[in-house]
Image (cartoon, rainbow, N blue to C red; front, side):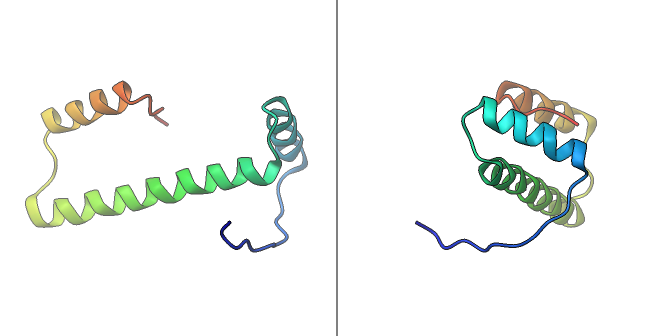
Amino acid sequence: MPSVVKRSISLPSDMFAALEQQASEEGRTVSAALTEAAAQWLATKQGLAAVRTWERKHGALTTTELAEADRLLDEAGVARR
């Protein structure tokens, strides 16, 4: 099992209550839910940085390329913000 770090965090009380409720309904811990959310957030940030790097080298993605990316993300079940 990977090592873990324990830290104190602050969340708005209503957000924590909703998080705790949802995690409970899924039979998960709040820590597991936050770990998943943090992993998704980091992956998103890394992906966006990779796109920026690519675009600096090759130019901006075209409308057609962006539409294809949207289609692939939809196909993969990745929700848009």
